[in-house]
Image (cartoon, rainbow, N blue to C red; front, top):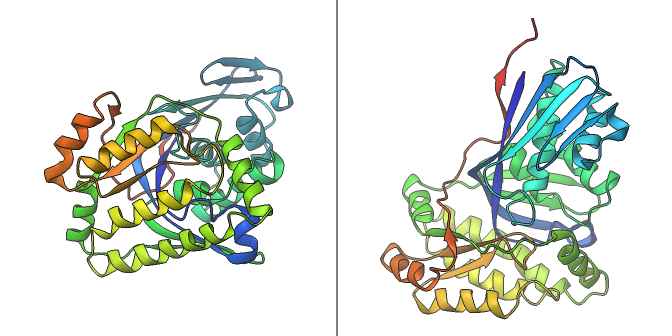
Length: 329
């Protein structure tokens, strides 16, 4: 039996600049961190010789070609396993439409576990790139590559998407322990209870890139990633709230559907209660709301957002890993 554990991620600034239509020409940059919410993938040999896949439902099918779960099917194909496996995926939080990069974490975790099942070890960069190929090239999802690299590598990073096929570069954010502790103390995470299909929102952003209406905003959002890296490195923990707010105001105008009256109401209430900034995670329109507030203002923020469910949040230093490896006897 093999069990992989893969972290979800929180993206701070620069999200959307990893979309191919933008970064292939202009280059993109994101600051994001892996967090202590995980996708677990269990892979075990199946005595019957067919395939069983367990997630929100259970499939029992003859071979890989009959698997309906597209991420499982394509990960099995990529790793060369046609049948004879029992696969289960387990998520710490709702695994669809929450803005924490769950589908990419599932893909990375599947690849890691399925390779380990065959005694093969792949580097985080290879797992991230193969997951990106599955989601973007094979399945045609209108997404970028930040989530796959965040899940595979772990930690708090500046992730750059180099233009003209230059690949992806991951650099850890270098800051003092005191700065990082202050950043983590300032963050609150709330679940809105609204799930949405990221693909529809991201398609709108891709269309806005194609017609040119979003490019100037995305150029500024890309540059905010470098500014945040530099200011955290200089010990300016308060920069996060300011730059989150600037990034969110820009992102709201990238395409229709990123925000709405209810979301704006939550955000504005948090700001009036003393929050420095925040954003909806992921593509927008629902999922998790991240708020940055000084510790002395957090009680007031919680009070005005008491209809939302708060979820504890800590950074995770490690990316995808195999936490159980039992050889078949």
